[in-house]
Amino acid sequence: MDNKYTSYIVEYDKYLDLVQQNIIKLLPDVDGLARVLRESEIYSLSAGGKRIRPVLVLAACEICGGKVQDAIAAACALEYIHTFSLIHDDLPAMDDDDLRRGKATNHKVYGEAIAILAGDALVLNAAEILVKDAIGTSDETLRLGKLKAMDIITSLAGNDGMIVGQVVDIESEALLLNQSNAEDTENPILQADYIKRLDFIHRNKTGALIAAAVLAGGLVAGADDMQLDALRQYAEAIGLGFQIKDDLLDIESTTEELGKPTGSDEKNAKLTYPSLYGIAASYRKLEELTFAAEKALDVFGERAAFLRDFALGMQVRKN
Amino acid sequence: MDNKYTSYIVEYDKYLDLVQQNIIKLLPDVDGLARVLRESEIYSLSAGGKRIRPVLVLAACEICGGKVQDAIAAACALEYIHTFSLIHDDLPAMDDDDLRRGKATNHKVYGEAIAILAGDALVLNAAEILVKDAIGTSDETLRLGKLKAMDIITSLAGNDGMIVGQVVDIESEALLLNQSNAEDTENPILQADYIKRLDFIHRNKTGALIAAAVLAGGLVAGADDMQLDALRQYAEAIGLGFQIKDDLLDIESTTEELGKPTGSDEKNAKLTYPSLYGIAASYRKLEELTFAAEKALDVFGERAAFLRDFALGMQVRKN
Image 1: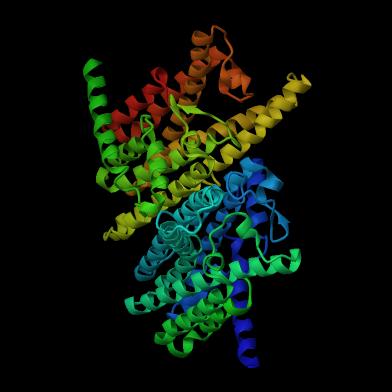
Image 2: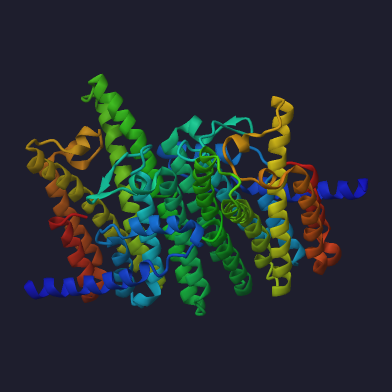
């Protein structure tokens, strides 16, 4: 068990190093007059975090028989898109957060206008590094795989994923606030609507980029339909799992720090799995999801060790 | 002259029709729960305007010997990116505009959060339709041309163009406001700095997407280096020309409507060509630019009639 965990850490660090070596190097430069833009982008790209999306891209590429080197652009592009979404989510017009991972949010440092533009730039940068990478690939099969990865990244980040999840999250907050004012939380029709919305938000706002990561890695490697199906099931399980784990940590951290059992999500009228189903049911769901994630990887046999251990991580550590 | 102008109008309408037929059709759909996102995107995509960027894509593709059909995705993607930039520019944190072309701006109708997300979505949609179009192209040479068009669009919209222009524009406004407070407008060092900034803003904030349009059309058509060079010179001339014309109209409309010779740009401390060089010099510059644009097209001979007439448009009509 100890040895196994050590080899997981070594593997994680191998992927992480590749990301760290390339994430700023690939970022398109700017004219000196506009250097604040690149500073602002780098500020948020360097704000910490475990880079789970790019690591998943690289790992999924490898278990499908591809070379990690071929998936670096996709890995970094996904991190640009994830980072853009955090910068825009933190804006006053959205979640209005001053701090993220203990650091001032982008707009608190650079102002709202530059923060909006830095987010915009990161999306364009993501598309630019992906297409430049495809142009620089002479093998036609590999190039087509990279284009399919780009397709899945842009659609699952956009109108078929992350952005629509964010839209429904924002609209549901307003709905929940009205709801709690009206003191009508026992209405079964509304309860069903909440569950539908919660599921939609989980699958899209956070799940979609996790799925994009795993599928993009597979597509670069030229994965077949059976492998892509397995990766899709795996991504769905860990996407929801990490979200539930996050929500549980929000409640539990608050319990310890503030000495009261309700978390910040509840105060902000956020729909979460624990708030709808309770804490015990959430932990049971996490176990089910871990099992489902491991099961999905069966088609890959031994090669899937890293992704299997990765799935176990949702039981013990924060996303 | 009359006949010539009629054939220009017919040609313009032919390109415009192709854009109108595809611009909403290509927009990725969304789940019903998030339909407000697509409504908000369509609201701004349908807000009028002459669609000069997509028309330029199609026309440049044709004069380089390509089929307009092959350039439709690039044309629509550029309009998505242009539209995203308008939505975000109008936000309270940026120019804070309530009206655009007489219609309420996106955030006045849908709220700031949805307006930010609609802009974000449009960038991702642009990348998505471009990559889907490239994947659907089996001819390898044509596909590579389309990828090069996508490269120029994403870089000239991003860190090598539009976004950095916007960054420098915002930073210069603050500078100019401080400056006019300090009543030190005669300082020659600052004057030189303004001219440098004005040139940078023109070339990037508005010029870059015009250049992206013309070059993307050429790249889809497989234009050679000589043709691309000619298109680049043409784009530079009309990009600056339409900007100066716009600034002149801002001053002149204000003169007529408000009965005073200073325009809204001056009130907003905007750097413009007329404010730095005066009105007479601006008109002379417009003539020079028209001449330069026409001259650049010489390599295309008769085929360039439409783009030549298009350049003449900056003398008579608003961008």
